[in-house]
Length: 461
Ligand code: MSP
Image 1 (cartoon, rainbow, N blue to C red):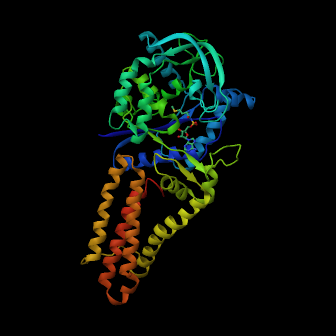
Image 2 (image 1 turned 90 degrees about the horizontal axis):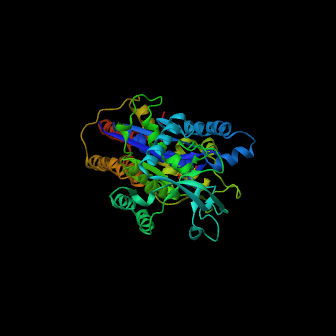
């Protein structure tokens, strides 16, 4: 039996989910649903990243303990995924005991192997992205992603011997589907070729994290902790007794935003090499959404709340727009006007009208039953030929060409609309009942195919 394992990043729960988080999760859901629909045993993982300085700071600001804080915030994330009909098989939290135990086990193993050693870290740190920076990587002295000031850190720290895995990482990055889209690869390769430095994997200046197993003064660096979620979710059987690591690992795809590709395609595989586990088959980096040309930010006040969007335009329109409105792998720009136009022009006028026209004709002329077709004409053959393009939809999904997948389905929607306009079934009732039956049969059969292929995207109930 073939299996398929797909993951989203685990999200920081310092705040409520927004458009960007919904995007990654919905696109992963579309892929997971497509795989399940074709009979592949699929495991879809999402969850929350709950340790680290950023979460601790957010909890302090609310005057509650970090665990109380994450327990309260995680609810809004789970609720949103439910509303968006996300079909994840498991929701991991890095505060889950099984996860923490797995992290500790791995740290121990690496220490015993000599791949983790004690030292001192001094350098720059951005709390917003929980990342260490070199002076040269800053942009005008601030974090290149968050445009915020970094802080100077100087503390005792354990290090992971990333440098040891340089050659293995370069080979991995060169393999065919390790990093997608392909144009993201060269930047990574060049950076690795500049030389991999060992990374700090523990902190002592605060204690909100997984305790180092043999040195409780230290907590595990939040990214080291977080990446391990992809295996800890399978490693221990949790509630899902049937799920085993052997069955689903290596992951078919880690879907991540472009800003965290380095962690997933370089650091994570190195940790896996160090513990003797295969790396993921693909790390796919998608682009970022801006909103009406601007970066989403609280200060600007343009953060898009997915809850509001689905209240206003419905779940179908939101999911459909996120797939269609951005080329998968590249950046996209969100605007409510575009979302509304897509809903009206494509979902309502093209698909909705097609279904509506056909069911009205069926109820009027065929007692709402699917009629039996008779002889085919050239125009019918042409439509059937067009429908063969649909065989390629799954090939596009396998290559993660989600926009091509959509284009193929939508090309067919347009073709069926044209077929109805050209055959004018509403005129046939009086002149040629057999022909009417054939035309309506072909139309309803086409709608059936469209419904199946669109199922991972819309109308999920
Ligand atoms: N906790 C880390 C990930 C650890 S995974 C082992 C993290 N979390 S995050 O909450 O900041 O979420 C990051 C993810 O949210 C990005 O990878 C991306 O998927 C998504 N996005 C956040 N803002 C986004 C946009 N404006 N547009 C598209 N997606 C972006 O990083």
